[in-house]
Length: 252
Image (cartoon, rainbow, N blue to C red):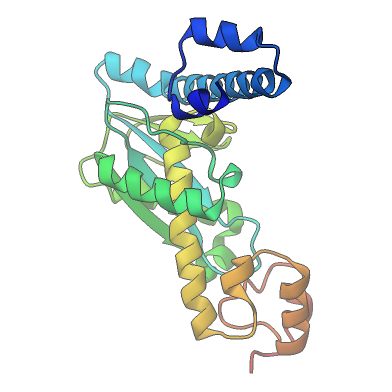
């Protein structure tokens, strides 16, 4: 019976009832494990379907909706990146979630699927120099606005992660924790994260020794140690602590 259940993709309800009453403990445990796995899969499908609720409502009203998110605010090095994504009205993308809750492998897989299925995708950045001039909040908003404007023909409505509205020529709404509550924002968070991680790996080659490929510019013990040893490089945000404290040393 155990082997039979293992071979079945969808055991019938009658079979599961029999297994739950089976005198063999191993069979009962297998049935219970299968049912827990099935319930987790159902909960995951419900979660993903719920992610699409906001934008589907707007699509039914005839609007084209773009999701916008940024990544890299809290880093000590590298630009801040933003992505804008317009998803199609079709089957949900399985596993779609806030990029921070995904493994690197899952983000790469979902990034490929998003780019293959999306109606439009755009990525933009604000440089280290712009971060210094505008502060990180202003630079993040600039990157998000650039991403939306890079789409070409503007959509009807934008859903933006966070609390801030943007200087856009279209109606939009800011959603706190939108990357965990709205499909198109979650998709934008994944695209932005994958794009920035790849950029930081390139910077690791340009400025070796800091470990950018590993920590992506965030404040880790390894990054701080490298700053102490090497001083800031041109990719570092000089106004950010502890980079500012070490600015008297130069990259070498």
